[in-house]
Length: 491
Image 1 (tube, rainbow, N blue to C red):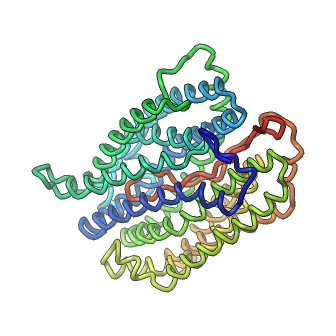
Image 2 (image 1 turned 120 degrees about the vertical axis):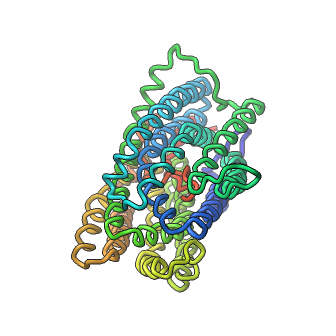
Image 3 (image 1 turned 90 degrees about the vertical axis):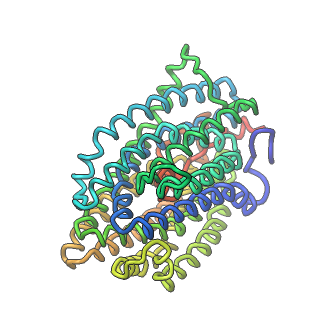
């Protein structure tokens, strides 16, 4: 049932709810990915392998910083959905104010820290000497866009918390359009502007994020939306700030730990040279497309499960699981087949170096064959998160990364004397995650949430993913455990 500002997902067609809720997010992700592909083409084909490698080594550090912001906006999404569902609009206003304070503070502090630590982090990652100067310059410019990106993450969480996944899509379209236009202009110095090379992509991101943020603020205030950020009322805000930090801090720490793990894996790849780094970066672009349906379906499933568990509809939750497996599995298995059968064709979109293509092909043959595993894992994780057991998915993701992917990548690549050992480690971590997630789902332990009578279920950080901010990396949204009000409060 659709209300003035949101949607009740406890009634009606489950397949329709999954599609209609996830489709705007998926479209936004696809548009952003298309933009990242265009950027990757500009960088990889026109600026060369070194430029692509410079951007690739910058990703993990960016993800660490953005993981902190995404954790806090995850708390925003949860608190907005709870208070909006219960029609507690005064509390909703406090959530908006606390988010405004935290986002502004975090954005500024992390930008300063990022500027100071960037060279040291790149050195610690064993960044190739020929790539280091370009990577440092690119990263420092790109980090200036972080406050605006944080603000857009917050606005998106506020909108999705009240059940609106369409409005954020419009601003994503605008941002992508701006970056698409600005990239070649700034890279090659068109229209009389200076030729900035790789730095041009970072400046394009900064300018587009700033302009879209300003437009979004004007729009949300003209629409007089209840979630419109404004000058925060600090009196009496401390309890909500503490609640937001209590929910968001664990999520921020968890996402940062995942990003650090990715950084370590990238560091292992860097040890095999510039070609390996470029191949990993190019093949990762294919990962982005493969992961998007799974991630967005996982978010929709988490939301549906949360509302229906809160309403006590166990049979609908089981139907959500079955439908999610069908949708996510079918789509990812097709993408997996394409990646395995036509890897060279896909990689040539980004790079022309035959050595890089050959190494990237081995990645897609190994990791690409496991995309469907990743897709199914997000379905069961969505149910678990929706039940409020998101600490379980947090532990599983950290175990998969820190106890499987990182150590196995290091050991296997050394034993095989080949970067392909890292590819096998990534694939193995997918299977570990799926096995653990499905085992927990079928154990039925998540059903304890059906018997809870609390007005505000306990929540914890959800499955972490990549920040949407990088112009060469498609956005990957964090799964959010949205918990509806209890049945007694239902409209």
